[in-house]
Amino acid sequence: MSEVKFSKEHEWITLEGDVATIGITKHATEMLGDIVFAELPEKGSNVEKDGTAGVVESTKAASDVYTPVSGEVVDTNQAIVDDPSKINEDPEGSAWFFKLKMKDHSEMESLMNKEEYDKFAKESAS
Amino acid sequence: MEIKKTSLNKLHQSNNAKFVEFAGYEMPIQYSMGIIEEHKFTRSHSGIFDVSHMGQLFIYGDESLTDELEKIFPLDLKNLKQNCSKYSFLMNEDAGIYDDLIITKLEQGYLIILNAACKDKDFEILSNLLGSKFKMNLDNNRSLIAIQGPKSVEILNSIINGVDQLNFMTGNWFDSDNQKLFATRSGYTGEDGFEISISNEKVEKFVENLIKKGAQLIGLGARDTLRLEAGLCLYGHELDINKTPVEANLRWAISKSRLSNGGFIGSKKIMNQMQDGASQIRVGIKPEGRLIAREKTKIFDDADTQIGEITSGTFGPSVNGPIAMGYVDKEFSKIDTKILLEVRGKKHPANVCSLPFYKKNYVKGVN
Image 1 (spheres, one colour):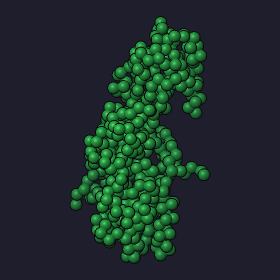
Image 2 (image 1 turned 120 degrees about the vertical axis):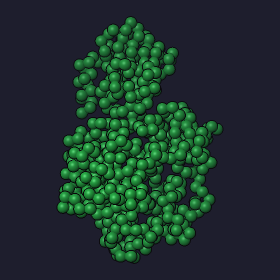
Image 3 (image 1 turned 90 degrees about the vertical axis):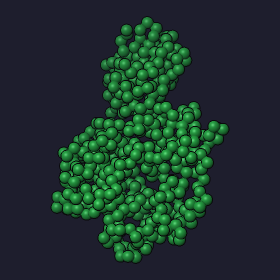
């Protein structure tokens, strides 16, 4: 599996062959608070880099989830739809959102590594 | 304008509050527990709410004050006993609501608790209506603390002996730490609890004592989910100048004896609406599944006609599902009516339901 990469919209992504797994970062969940609703893209649909690919709602507000790369949705995580509190518990592990079959691997290049993202998150929070 | 702070601001900070601006005040939206845990803690233990941003209006006067206030509020104040409280409204001639409030009869006058965002305007309106005959004091030297939840009576009684003898919607003056404070058995969470009016100098130590006894600070976020589960209105959402108490389904708050003769501001409209019904009415709404429909969500019937709008919507932690309130056309206000909610461009099924979503636990008959 590839190194974890991060987007400015606070998604994380890993790549295994052509299949990317995407979720939202721990930092994002801390900003959102208790998550009580999750909506995921439909399996088989195509999503475009930086386009919306889902929604999460906390007790306070709704937020769009973006996809950091383009591709066809090949799997979604029903467990987080059934119990959205799992997203707060393990955002960068078992509470992944969806898997994409990537078309263009070069889209990974513009994303941040962990060190860059931590710095970005710290700056955007202050 | 500079943001205002309550006397507990430092205590909020040291308890890791996340702040928001609310009605011109810097107020805690949540602490480290988070909204859901704070909500559940209040329902199972005891939550402390800083509601010092709300207005505490003391009006002093003789019997003629009661007469004058009856010309304003739809209440039978003559027969209201001393230290008893009523929920009511300040209205305009069209029965539009300027504010909703709690009024308590004191030995020599009344205490009216007003919403933070409305209190200055309310003071102006009431000053104009009452003239200079009565002493009015919108008291900025007092803080207001709510303590809510099943353990609250035991915790508060260990600090203010005797509060356990209060019935729901009654109050009294108590001596504590060499000062007089006014406590009422009331609140806005659906739980048993109290609201305590206490001087700004003493409030921090008082709240620290409550925390030592096992209560926890709770933010405005959980206050909102708690009141919504209890089916209670929030000014600026369910209530505003374009809504009447009849439309808001609050006719229970209008004293029956005042309905035959009227004589309060807005009485004509109220009496008409009581007879003919209002064209729109506030209802409880339960979306199917987990979908949350927030304020301003449009409500449709199955023929695609808009029939109303959501005024508050969130996830109810104790109900463990989404809940909402809103206004719908009269013919759609029956319980179990199927409606559609438009969220992010799609229509989702929901049902009109009875309120509250969560059974209230008020203590009515102590003595």
